[in-house]
Image 1 (cartoon, helix red, strand yellow):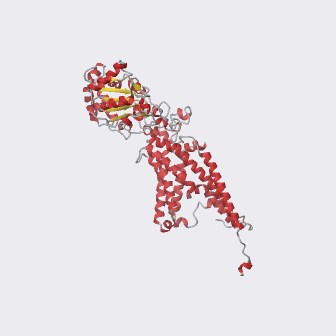
Image 2 (tube, rainbow over the protein chains, first blue to last red):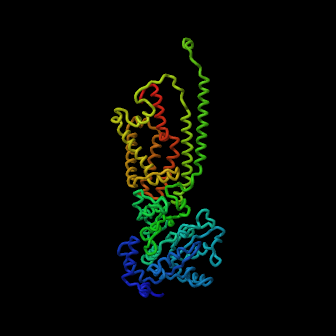
Image 3 (cartoon, each protein chain N blue to C red):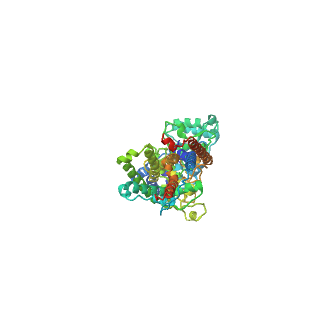
Length: 359
Length: 219
């Protein structure tokens, strides 16, 4: 697959019109002006396979599965194929020293220009011994690869925020990419896994404008993570009307009412699931009847339980009974003290008689 | 600490501590107050129509003759914000869910837009009542730190809750966490301030009514 992207797409049966439509859609999804679609199409069509190095650390390969499989063979998958993916352990044919050599080679040939994609968190405990590739720790490989890259894409919640490996008590000392690399532009694409079109959207933006898209305070592209799931949810009217499913198989659940009471984290989760959906727009978690887990937010795993409503206590009350007993005890003790004070006052009271007054 | 960690803290340990202090304080003070007791009134009881503890519980919710005209802001503003607070706390869906999780009781909720409207009206009434307290020299003279402080801790949960649902100023997660935190501060302050009237109100009215009814005076 050599030459500009448009040639490769044409060989695979993608027409110019389809490609332009796709670019226009992508531009509108990213809230860019209409002209950006055209610019994007031109830039992407002419793009000559930027070198991409994908480093897998403490991860489950779910992010790779999401990008490469769930959308295949859609245009997103193909564009993803079009980049020069010089190192991706799951996808590459090479293995062992050959694979490591490919990475070293790509880093050398494209020094300062390659895009670094990272999925998985980086363990820091025991000098990073919890996760090693070719005898080198993840943190060591990341520092080396980050030094020569143009930008970093942290794919998935683990690379973005530490994710599930960082869940309490974080046995491996897992951290995110941005905890280690401070001097390179980093875009976080959190999600467990993230939505494929977000990935291609960021890639298209990078190819077109040579920069990363506008990011929010958590390093996520604003265009995809600007709204909460709750605000864009098609079940939102039921929330506003106070109509809730109370179990997964009650009348409310069958009517498609709001899943807030079943622990939906939509109100505090920023992601594009509600608008972009999954598997080519087929469905998304809430549409298939399960509340949002909040997977694109930092520390979602320790958010007080997936099936507890946001307004419900995150933990069972621990001190309530003890506090009630102490409070009642204090009340009784004070009342005894008050009674003693009254008795003492009564005992020391000297009765005034008429004779006293006449003195 | 991330937004979600802050939210999880206020929903977890924060709520634990706040409810603990609340229960401790309320039980302590109620037991202390109700065990104080008074000497038995040995005088022969008099009887008068409408003089009883029960009557007073209701009568004290109505203005004395002429008072509504003399102090309309206190009465009307007071009615509005108390009713508003009750509507928000007891008929908002997320609040009912919290109550259900804590004590197991639940009932139907009002639409969230209505709760939003109630919040706006409540805040407006509270601001008017506060302005009245500042403007009227006598009220201002009688006000202590506790009055200003309890106004603030009552107002903040309404304000932050409303701002969270309207997505104002801060991201929803942060504002929601601040809302829960402000409600927890209210829970902690309540037993040790004049806000305890939420619990003692009817008891003290009954007491006053009964003492005066014994003397044949409907109050």
